[in-house]
Image (cartoon, rainbow, N blue to C red; front, top):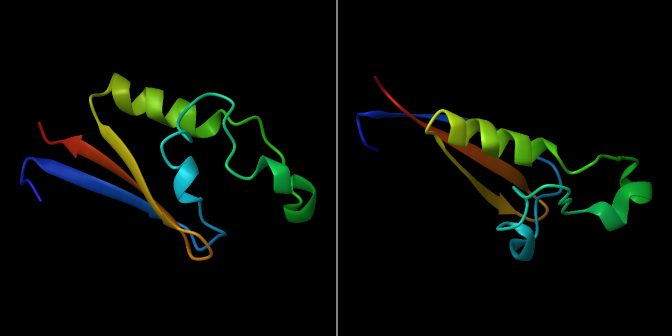
Length: 82
C-alpha cells in the first residue's frame, strides 16, 4: 500500500454481489438483487452506492468493491493523506 494513502474498508457477510453486477452497482438505480426483494424482504431505490461513489469522486477518493457470492462484500475507500 502507498504510504500516502489511507484505506477504509467496510465488509459484510451478506449474500454477496454477482460478478456480472460488480461494474454496474455504482450506477444510479442499479440493484444487484432487485429480483429477490420479496424473498429477502428488502427494498430500495438503488441510489446508495451511486451517492457514495459521487461523494468519493468529490473528495478525490477511490471507491471499489470485492465480493464473493454467498460470502459477502467488501467496499474499499482509498483516501489520499494531506
